[in-house]
Amino acid sequence: MPNFILCLDQGTTGSTALVLDESLAVLGKANREFQQHFPRPGWVEHHLDQIWASMQQAIADVLKHTRIDPKQIACIGITNQRETIGFWETKSGNAFAPAIVWQCRRTADRCDALKKAGHEAKIFEKTGLVVDAYFSGTKAEWLLDNVSGLRAKAESGAAQLGTIDSFLIHRLTNGAAHVTDVTNASRTMLFNIDTLAWDDELCALLHVPKAALPRVVSSAEVVGKTAGVAGLPDGIPISGIAGDQQSALFGQACFEPGMAKCTYGTGAFMLLNTGTKRKNSHAKLLTTVAWRVGDETCYALEGSVFIAGAVVQWLRDGLGFIETSAQIEALAGSVPDSGGVTVVPAFAGLGAPYWRADARGIITGITRGTTRAHIARAAVEAIALQNYDVLEAMQKDAGDLSLLRVDGGAAANNALLQYQADVLNVPLSRPKVIETTAFGAGCLAAIGSKLFAGTDKVKNVWKEDRRFEPKMAAADRDGHIKRWRHAVERA
Image 1 (tube, rainbow, N blue to C red):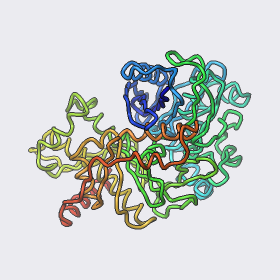
Image 2: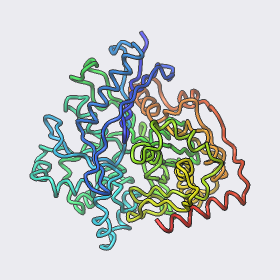
Image 3: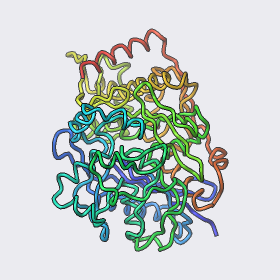
Image 4: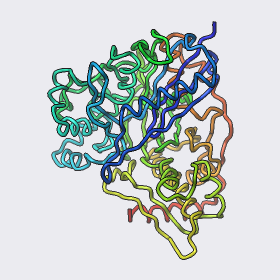
């Protein structure tokens, strides 16, 4: 009887379910979007019940499409938007309040206060993170301080705190498991990435009760089994967990130190495998746990761009330039260049290497001749130009990069990838499977449930679809970068 792997990828704007067979071939995929909530400028929230509903719908869709017998699902892997955090009732799993999304800036002032009080160096030493509202710790503190009665419930164990992986596992196991893996824990600003444990000093600093925190597990082990989930039999082991960017690094088979990938999703995230010893950045990148499999922990350097694919959604939903996201390539390609227009999509501040919570979006260079197509092209170029800043910082820390593997939804945009190769002056390699985030979670689940051992099988199935070589003249590239830097200074 064949075994199938169900991969659940809970992202910022949608939930994806992917089915792999034992050879790691993709049999089918389904995605369901869910509502984004913006209650105030700079605030971003998700409703946990809407996330769960979208994931249930995606599971039902992919099972219907692939026509597999759910009883033949051997294991489940989970990957998720990382820093988004919420509280739910321990018994029922019902949320006490909307989850605060990684993009939300409501705790920026609290982060400034932590820096002014001299805590920045200590937090970086323990967590590998800069002090920023991007991470989960100050979000959890805000909820505890602002949701009536929540702190008492959290301290008593009646409320559980977690990132989205923890919430999904609670629902999948009918409340039997409250866990997170090391990669998600490493994004909270509460977790010591050397000891691989919740840090007492940081929890006290941010007034987060450890009683509410999940048990931390590795990225590939059985942590619970399904119970009471519509459409799935009880007893399927959940055996792989990783935050979305770490999962993509694993799915891209970047198993050797020096290998790097960039994922184009709602944001864009570049990760470089640095091996089994943490490497601290001197260029404002993050040090993060890449994964833990067996007794071995792997670390990575990361550069985080907050707005990538989200700028295309903004053109679609906010400005009405396009009806579907797929139309952006044709609109942007209808003009030979941006006509001098530059878009800095700092809708949620600027991430690496600037870490400017106060920055806001800006469009420069508009003339009477500017059209929607020029703005669309500038918006697409902005995705690549933000990654230039990240790569420049990464090269300061780790030396020149000879190749960058790329994935994510926007990696299907050939024009974007060619422009990206041009401004980075580095070849890009796109795999045949660009859903590497979900794929990586499935591979971890297969290892965790002992369908196969080690990473050799993942390396063997990884195949290149297309390589994008730099073609832009150095003078032209310098001109694009100079114009970009000038616009960023004004954002």
